[in-house]
Image (cartoon, rainbow, N blue to C red; front, side, top):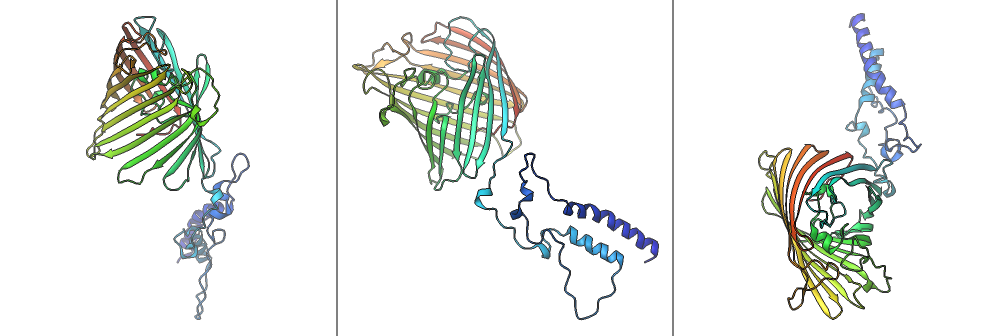
Length: 450
């Protein structure tokens, strides 16, 4: 090789080799608080990572003399050798159990803001949701701070703080197990129970600006939640089947209205607690069709007398059409919940039925429409005669509400909705309402469940 060509090859090799050699010689930096990063952990490195690959064993024949360029290319080849190189073929050792799933120093955080401009035809209306628009004019439905992170290999932590005009409330703060055997999982802390379908969801996951009045009538403005513990079991069946059981306190005007409600009664035995159970079943009807069917029940004491109890039974259905066999933005869902409540009062038994059914149609990439019908019967005695309900004394006839909504998503981080409704019967005397809502999402927010 002429001297000029050999000199050019030498410079080219040095240019390629120098950054690689510098990167190998520079130790990985730690995190901002001084803790070493994962790349710095000794268990992450394969044997031989810190040294160049050994040279090949010498043969009996005398090798040809090496030149300076040959040395440069040899060093470059050693530096660039990857995990597939024979010199690096030893497997990487697994991390100890205590190091797997290490806690993130930056948990996922998200702010979700819901605003509404509202109009009601009457000052007295019967909105039952704690995040519903409740006055003509501007409303802050909620400003939710959502935080979640893995605590260690065994637990995950989730929290939801809700900021409103009148203060801050702790909506949820609970831990979830990650490694229980036999299809088991547990949660404990302040949590929304998985009764029915809509109870465990937050307003930004709804197709409408307000929650169905059935939920507020039975459990209260915040839905069924409280301090407690939950266990779930993924039943080994050919189709998805999950059995859920929850135990929690039975008081709270906004979360256990049909039970102890606003009365703070002491827990003297296990019968003074509220028990919620649910069965969730999922069926793939077709590549484009899926069905979720649930059964739920809640049992607990009420304050109407010694040993008086309340029981709520419910069924929910969620049918979804979303074509995946062809390119399409269409999505159609049908969601229905029906709740039957039975309560003991002195010398009598009351029962009532409430529920809703709704259809949502996403007819374009950024537009969707929804219709909802809600029903609530008056309270009846066991004989079938209309009763005067101690919780809702003015609810003496059937209540019905029809709502229609049109939603627009400028992006996946914002939504605008126009909604109108007509509410008649029950504790109302006929109320028209209109809402224009805006929803903004900032930060890392986890995906919603099916």
